[in-house]
Amino acid sequence: MTSNLINIKDKIESAAKKSGRHEKDVTLVAVSKVHVADTILPVLEAGQKIFGENRVQEAAEKWPTLREQFDGVELHLIGPLQTNKVRQAIQLFDVIETVDRPKLARTLARIFEEENKRCDVYVQVNTGLEDQKAGIAPEDADNFIKLCKDELGLNVTGVMCIPPFDEDATEHFKLLKSIADRNNIKIISMGMSGDFEQAIAHGATHVRVGTAVFGKRPGY
Ligand SMILES: *Cc1c(COP(=O)(O)O)cnc(C)c1O
Image (cartoon, rainbow, N blue to C red; front, side, top):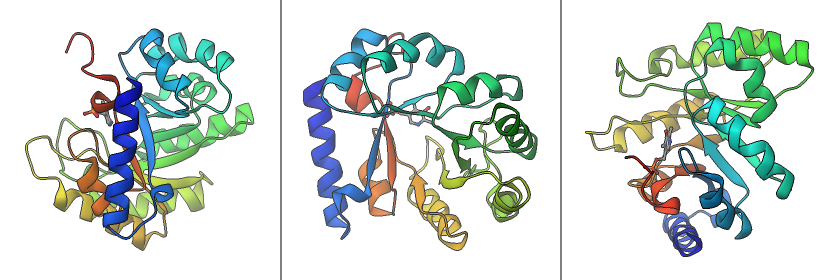
């Protein structure tokens, strides 16, 4: 696991340099979903701090204990968030990467206020306009980002996308980058195990890598 981590970090560094950027401009979010604490521990011990999980309940079972053992962990929610899980989610996560609809944005704003606790949020864009996939439609992204920032006061620091699995991701990466640039958003979360180098070439600042760090997910 530790050798995978080192290998991925090397690849991130080379990809960043190749596109004229610094390795520090690209952050690895290690996607630990489905993996048990024993699998995550060596990666924490190797110094990785930023992790992604896709289910609130699973994160609640694993991360409070891991956080007690390691300082400075930053946990990202990368899966869909139901409004009835928002209160629990904001206690567990530092960044919610999947803000994708007005109802969720409004609920987050209200509960941040009630709990007096805030997370950074990324707006998820459904770049492939896939029915089964979450995310705001690209044509609605500008207005939605304005709603989140200006009307609701959310701290929108990033955008994220999950391109269709059966297509070359290039156009999706370019589209997300253009949405980020014109909305003056600095963080661009795109790229997974199979395409993180390509994502970096197109401007990713955060890559979400699971399999290439932890190996195959159990049961998949
Ligand atoms: C699982 C997941 C990843 C990581 O996928 P790998 O192919 O295992 O690297 C990245 N982003 C999201 C949103 C995921 O759900």
